[in-house]
Length: 271
Image (tube, rainbow, N blue to C red):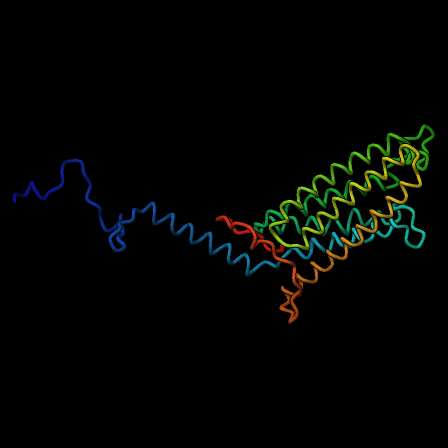
């Protein structure tokens, strides 16, 4: 065998130890080695995030619970309450602030579903606060004399709110569909909230056509349903806190993920 037989052909390159690495029968290029290191760094960073950052889900649930139960009691007329204007601050601060913080933290943690839900609820309560804020004069703008009470019974005002609550209910119904792969408690919350929005839409519709008695009954039904939803949300909040605080008693949420085919994406369980 001549020297030419063992030397590489002109233009070819002999892999060097500095440029390649052998693992068993396989030789890895520098590009593959770099990608493997990058993947491991990403996984390590995600794991560190889970160990470093607190679970923000309970914070968002707390904002929802406090606002939802207050609104529910007003709608049912407890203690003679007749308007949400007296508690309008809860629609700007208690609910939205906690929900906004939770939305940001859920985004940082990579929790897509809870980020979507908290962001939606945040802007919903803010929009409701504008409607109920007396100085905004939304209802008064529907009265020729600028009277808020007169405007609140007008067709245009109530029909607008009726259509708006239908859209809100449809968004909640969408969340309900996807909550079916998470747990029973969340599925009940979203289905009940969607139903409450549709009932409130019917109440506004009847108010616009002077069906005040039926409208009031529908409002009370919607308020009662929202109150039950608030209790379920309280339960979910306590369940998450018990888990995070390593409490000896764990509350079941009714895991539904086991009934679904698992993809390569990690589903959120109870977040």
